[in-house]
Image 1 (cartoon, helix red, strand yellow):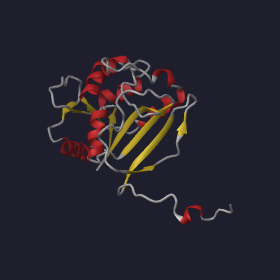
Image 2: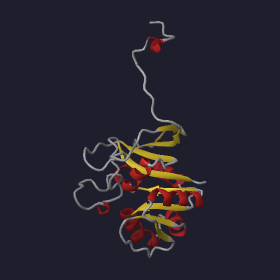
Image 3: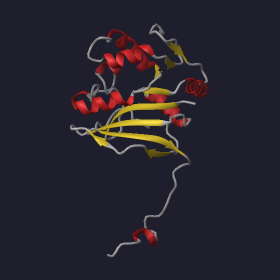
Amino acid sequence: MGLIHVELFATLDLVGQAPGGPEEDPEGFPFGGWQAPLMDEAAGAQVLAAYEGTDALLLGRRTYDIFAAFWPNQEGGQDDEFATLFNSVPKYVASRGNPDLSWAGSTQLGPDLAGAVREVRNRHEHVKVVGSLNLVQSLLREKLVDRLDLWVHPIVLGVGKKVFDGGAVPTNLTLLEPPVASPKGTVYLRYGLADGTPGTGDMSAPDRGAGRDD
């Protein structure tokens, strides 16, 4: 069985909407493209490294349409490594509509999303979910996320769709690597799904200060 990796860019208030450009969500969101001023060479290298070994993409309809219009025309350019990867691997699209699947290697998932994603995970080793917040929240609800790569950027927007809006269930995660900050202040966090659900405790318990001398 393979792994479902989610790759997300977010603000400090965990808005993940339209980081790449205004065209990603042209109606009702005033900050499309908020990520661009905060990108630097270190963060770009982190993102590229995170995609090593990817053998399939799992995308929501909106993200798929944006990618299908862009990446087939980028091979040989400054984003050639991403373009070559995205154009060559299978693409699985979660949509209730009828997407144009002209991008080579594209397949629409069936109405049983959870079952279809499990089949994709069994078929591939490293499946990447890029953006696609509605899809991510569905996967979180079904606990079908194995890895979560989160780049947290040093801005607060106050509006926009958040990474965990309405889709999360109580879940434990484990930090897989030490956090890494880029020169412009973006912090890269890599988590893995852990067993169980969050526990509770009492911060005023008598043993809270055990071992202190004051």
